[in-house]
Length: 478
Image (cartoon, rainbow, N blue to C red):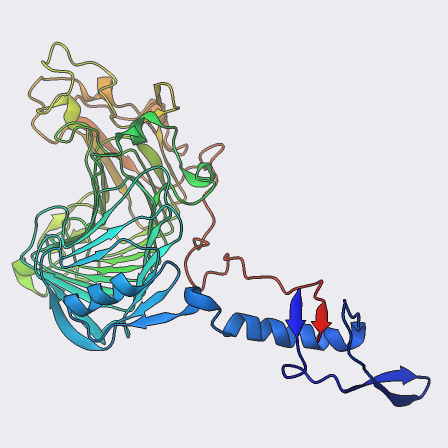
């Protein structure tokens, strides 16, 4: 119910049609609901526009940081309430170790990438915590990090899983020099959208390693629409990655990651760990709609070229889907020809969770093609379909010397642990050391549907739900 007084809206006279003429009618003071259908159709839209644009209490207020220094930014964060925006002005500032802690559901907003420039000098310098209620956003910054390679990395995102609302990084620029950038110590509930990441050969943009919320591997998967809320996975979408040739991502313990509609240029793309050198390994992955570009095929920069890429995707455990990606062939004059996608099982080689060679058997824990339904692990093959490129090589085989002398086909089989319906399994030339097959063709995984894209919580997303216009306004004129 909107209460209006005469100083707000002057209803001294209105026009009401009577036949062909309009005659002014005086409106006296009313108490109670006044129904003026024709006039209020226009007025309700005006009031609704004012309602959306006007600051309503604390939740629409903006807190302005005095500068981009860590102390001024932290002071502004401390002053803000949930739902507010902290504006950080233009400038170039350094944030030392643990100097900015964001533990509120607010928007931390710089003046724009390349305008508000933050140099992170320690691992971590900036800590962000998921909140039980309300989204936390970081937007409009350039973050730089040099010579810091210790996890949880320069920007650490932490919190509980499942549960909690997401942390969203959108419209930022991240620059790395012999360093790592985003370290996520939570299995999911982070959205990374419309950012640029620039780095050298061994720089990593995003690492996920959750050793606290270990129930990710005892909870049913959240692939595709199984993540009905959109809050259970790490969503990386519509970003640009330049460099990071040895791997832009490291999807490690309990990680649930969706990588979609990104552009990778001379980037190693997706790296991972299984339950081998890590205690749990990656939980599951979805990689689709991305472009993997390889522009420097002649190595114009010589042996320092970022084109020294060993693979675009390396999977060491768990299950997932890889589809609708575009791959440039990994072949150059100085580095030779590499496989586009690599599949490994270190848990049956030199780092065996089952123990000795004689105690190791199929399936090794959390190995390639393993999933969990909430009660038990089960075999759920990695699916490939509709990937595009002149040549897409998927190499599955030993990578750490096979010290036990196992037959690869005991631990990985196409049709059981990996699936591409275009493969003629009867014609595969099997080897005890593994086999390379084509990643072209294939049909979708039965029952799988990808989650809404763009993510509905991304600002500007066409899948976001805009507020509806009010339909039953009434007014009390006093």
